[in-house]
Length: 256
Ligand code: NDX
View 1 (tube, protein in one colour):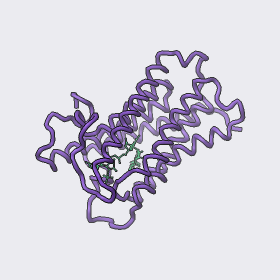
View 2: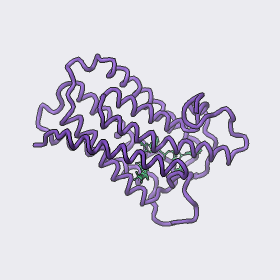
View 3: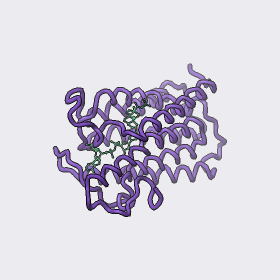
View 4: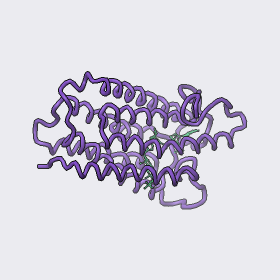
């Protein structure tokens, strides 16, 4: 059966951090080409309906940790801290894989990005799952540690914001519609990237709750991946809608 190789965790986490920096340098200037930032005329084929694409892309992030857990000989997750933390990760990806895609009204998604997205989800699902199931060790009272409780609170808050904002975006369109409107309500009152803000808060909360290198690397990756995207969304809105609310920020309420 499998065991923990700390060197593997260190190497995979470092590579994730390096990928984050690569993303930042790539996507600060030009946004990743899907959704509202896809160039219209190029590649009319080579796309998959948004539902299939998001389902397939995010599935490994749920499946890989779930499989690792199933392969582990009992007691599967001791102590309680690990068990709860691994469940948080799977819970998010249960939502992202089995709920989000079935309601999305997004445009068809480019196959090429889907491929890289899937690879990324296998990689990250393995890293987070492997670490929590085979490597993490928490004291028995971790559930009452300030890092666990404050991190859990941030995670839940971020997830709430993310899911609520996804819902507000979806309600901007009738089924079959693909046009863009000005998002209203919830945290969109303050920022253009409310769903991204929620997701970032969520993964930093997870990092604090697990107090682990892999989770901090993933939170940093998320920031570098969707942070710039929030900024590009913001610019797109300012350019497209003359009546766009002037006080609205890109990503962080009242700040940026
Ligand atoms: N999937 C994470 N990198 C990504 C897919 C792309 O889960 O090669 C990262 C994720 C991947 C990326 C993933 C990893 C890095 C990749 C990248 C592609 C290239 C890149 C692989 C895996 C890469 C290197 C170089 C390192 C190898 O038509 P539409 O689709 O625009 O409709 C949208 C709609 N909408 C509106 N409707 C009406 N009016 C408006 N004004 C609207 N604005 C938007 O709402 C969509 O249907 C929906 C949401 O759109 P949008 O653009 O706000 O969010 P989206 O980016 O699609 O994300 C959806 C959710 C969101 O909650 C977000 O927080 C979460 O997924 N997410 C997304 C990306 C990454 C991520 C989370 C994370 O890092 N944790």
